[in-house]
Length: 218
Image (cartoon, rainbow, N blue to C red):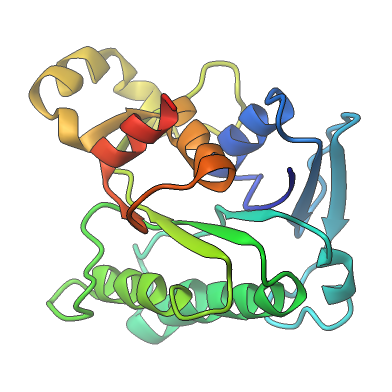
């Protein structure tokens, strides 16, 4: 497969990129970032583009790819609803719309989050917006679109973009796994599930943690 990855300077995106670089079924990776990763690898190509709301200058570079792993995202902390909507829904849909026109046979994989609200209702602003993003991605002309809802993610050791929060409480992972198994997965499991969704598919389009873990082993 030839894949596109966004958000590779973040924790999840870096983990997905790491597994893609080592996966036998992935022959080419185009990373689309605002700044360079400073990484070289025979599989890796890098496209630096500052404005994800206007892709007109680079959209022709997206042709011929089999999958997109969209790992770009922001926290809702400190943001009002219009700002979070723009940086979550609008940005994602702009990118996805361009890709769907360039590659109708593409599989699009979106990192959402546990608790996203598919009904697009409720008090939680971020959950409504994530739910709307999930719903509208399903309407685009992709071969398949999958949404992943991780909760607690155990980071992959040795990667540089791990959130400090996860580093500090990593020792509690065995306890979390025992008590809250349906909310806990590793970054490796999430990354492999995303790759496998593009490789072999999955019967449902919105995956909770148990689906993520199951798919990672296939």
